[in-house]
Image (cartoon, rainbow, N blue to C red; front, side):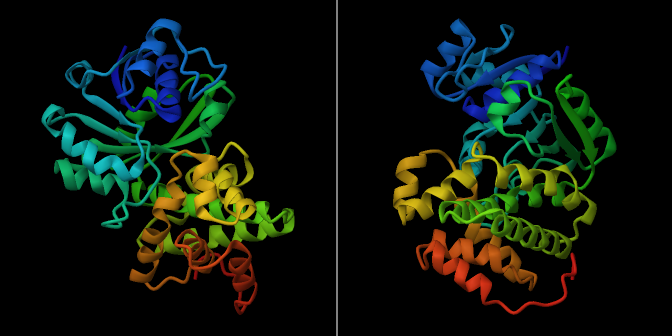
Length: 335
């Protein structure tokens, strides 16, 4: 039985903790909210984030950082992407020098345009051999219901990736391995912006043709952007890329899609923030993704249009009109 610490007690942190328990690990989940922690420990539920879900009786939660970091040397990070740096700075004194750090975060840091693994390395000076990610088409509530799902565990070595695979695999959670952290991580971050755009189209009451166009052209942008940074194109065609994009763009459970829909229906970012009320990584990362694309000279019209809506420069209707006015060329997947 492997000891694992999950840092974060929201919907995703709790879901990851459940998966790890079901995989036979000894799991301690840390969170700041005392009420949530007490509910997990006494009732084996987290109703605010995962309604009607019964959590494993073996899952234990705590608000005590000393206890959380002393429990294990495998830390699974499940917090909002834009808070990662500040949290790591706070946690730095507690983190063992030989700990394995597993990011489940999907975002690009706005101030630096760093991927999450790069933020971990920057703050902790952790060796690449200790940093890994797990990503894929995993909507928290569906996974918490133990519906069959797949994911990719990526590390700098096959050994690290297979360690994660063993750690997370259950009868309902099928985990594949990869050594392409860059590609898997970038795909997970960029798809959130595309999902926002698809949600905006849904909010305009546009149908499957429009959504399919945005998903497919968005995937093309993800692929070209990742390839320009040296990623393996196959990562974009797999669970971390295409799989995650389809789930995020197609499901009303997707925060990014739901937020985009609310922007169109309410006519403003303010309306969406008020009515969705959850962390939406695509909103935070949109401008950073555009900057990443500009650095390597990759054209990303769908992503740029979404970023301009997020910034309040144009409406969702204006974004669509702009996209339809762009000149068309050969539909090469990566060019």
